[in-house]
Length: 591
Image: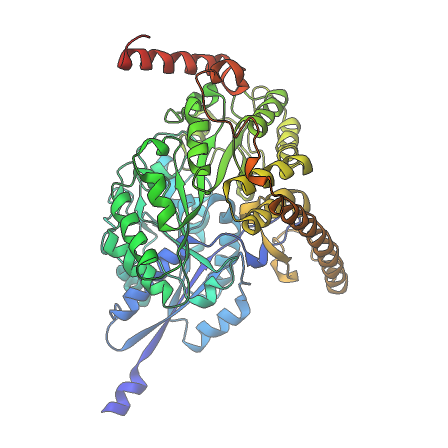
């Protein structure tokens, strides 16, 4: 009896792939070590592991799970096809967290498995966003239907068992649409990646979401149309459990992916629990959080972030022109608060990273150059990440252009926030792309990086971490032609990973060019890192480093509105200052 049970057991193969996308050279963007961990892959892996542990397919079927992040791991399709063949194609390939720029690569991967009659499902922001905002067929969704790929829109908590059961029974539906039924996430399986996956990222870090959804209405955002405007949260117990599970693997560095952790209603209870884990339980937490530009007004928020282990904070600054912010419905950003907020983080030795969007309707090359100069001179930012304003499928911006029939780039591979994808009222395509490329070298000039290092030394930032980020953000766009967030260490390529339709290179020439390219770029990387490291050592040893001061580091005063270009260079900035003064007078009385 026991022997017959062992023989009769079946093994369901669940292969989860987070696809990358194609670079300008036509090859998949893949690294020996990638920079950013995939939260989508961690989320689905955690849910899948729970399904396997609970026997979602019955007592006689085991679930074998393999997670692949293509940004740091080659998708070896021949090997995977053999794996499925050995198990009579009993399983599912799940393309996880697919963004619009990753959709073409995802379809190319799916095609190989569908040709072998292996079930494939696809989820993520592209398919979910298109179903949420368009007609259900737009932006190449029919390619999935024609190929027999099942579309999963929405979130997987509470629904993943059914997807696995349908795949096992051979009855996958063409579409699973849960966009109007967003689940609660408290006490659900927590995001998790095995150590073998985490080791392929820089800094041995992983990620989790403490909450989902955003109440704001930014027109360029897809999150609000996929995860909704109603916020949902994990509990402090959930967070403690996932921290302990990861710490058991030796992982204590996390990117909390909430679009705005400062608006998580459980922020204080979560931070208190993390403080206890760090200060009492001895778990050496290191955290990166995303917040808004008004977070400094929340009592104790920044202080508790520091105690919980926050070393870096990402702020959606987006722009310093209020007219541009208003055009994108980014009403929550107040430029009059930018310096106060940034200095508050600086006072606690926490590194600030800011997203900055180029290509709002009022932008010109000249105005962008002026704004970057103001950023450098008047705002105490450490790292600035530049993006092109992109009409992402699933956003209100894309929907408006699509309904109006305005031309957009037909190649979804270019929707990576670094390629120009539609026309601009005041810039040509060439001017827009040119000023985007120029912005990186303008902000990360040698002189300004010296200033950033001096500010870091004066405020107690870990200099080695700042050096690594300055290297990554100052070189990747120029050296590799990719946004730093899509970068890593040692760009890898394989002849089989070139985009279909492009010519295949002769293997010998391909490998010679790859090795030569690797040697050249490694030499450049080492020389840049050496230069930055020596500068950091010199500055750190300066006995007067704590006395460093410049315009950006100066305390905020009532005279700022007269002295700062940030508040005087545009009509919108002047109106913002006048509005702030009016509000102050109404609430405090005229002086």
